[in-house]
Length: 247
Image (cartoon, rainbow, N blue to C red; front, side):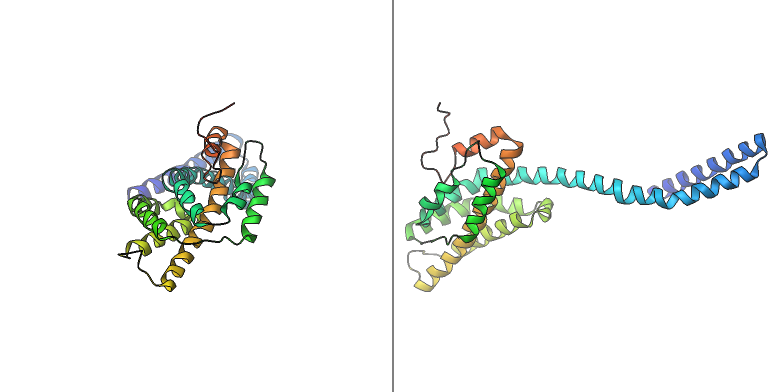
């Protein structure tokens, strides 16, 4: 209510100011024709001015706000890979018999360009990831994901995730896999059909996780070279990667 009263007062002040200025002009020059001509001209320009403000300026401001939100979301994605995603990729790579071959393509370096990232993303769409489940791996995966459940839930509460559908899908897929594993008491005594079901859940997460990781690495390569340097030194697909800087 206070805001509406404030806006009404402001609008009335502007209107009265215009009337006073026109009155002063008429009192000095006694030229009502000029005032009328000028008023009509200004009214004719008003729709064009409104168009410029609403379409051009609002779009520019909206784009700026979106960029700010995306920067914040990329920080959330970075926190996800730092705490969960990178370790999860290493676990899944142990499930994937073809990871060593495809992993060669994922061993990026500082000389990569946008075309290199696009090439690998295209290959990811074409490759058939061969995910095999091992009972001991499933137990380790369950233990790892259940310890990260609260972290995943906090991320899913972030309203900025609505701006990033692919990352939202990744979190939902990871959380679903966590629930599937957590609700099974003994992962060593499951029917073959259930292991096949879990392989499907793992593969879903694995594919989205790699795709989102590539997008995030491309973002770091473009905007934060020092973070990209650390990321390639901890690349989960490069067994020779070392966090220590070696000349």
